Image (cartoon, rainbow, N blue to C red; front, side, top):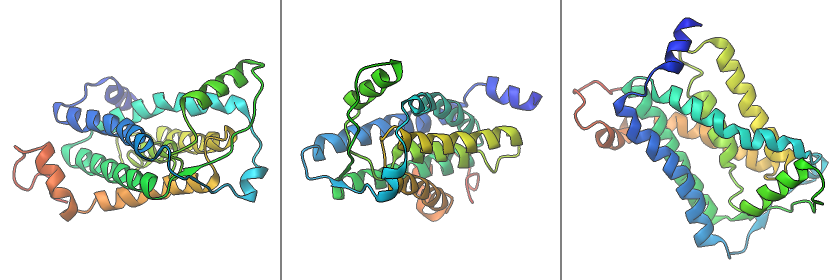
Length: 228
């Protein structure tokens, strides 16, 4: 526990600032750019009969919005790892967002949101979410993808205690569920986000396609320091 507290309280290494800021900027950039380009294009609705069985539950918006704090904490924890791990993770994150952007343009998706009355704080909060987040850029779910990245980025780290790994896994699953309860996504969007995170993380750990990204991030690293 004491070691984990030191990790949480410590500073982010200088070599992690650029990949961390790039990841945060790219996350928003992909979403906004895809909407600007494909916003008026035909969008496909992949809602299934199973999705119609999932109840709408407005209080789930607390998890849907609260996950941003979860993302910040875990991405900072990941950014505090060694150069090799930082490069592997943020290269994986970059790959995933590039794929998301391509899918958003090649196969734009949408869904049908419930008509809500502005009664009660939860409905009002949901109406606000609906107003600022149009029903597009749904497959794969970036919410689910980033939340799963928060888990897989720490699950193999010995310095992170088991309880926090379990918490991160449960939090990621709760975020996935919240996207369904709030009608922000459909089931296939959730699976798409989780699978893309795992696939990108697998690719990101391979040495050969990662070397260009390594040279950009760490041009002064010693030879062999970042080899897989």
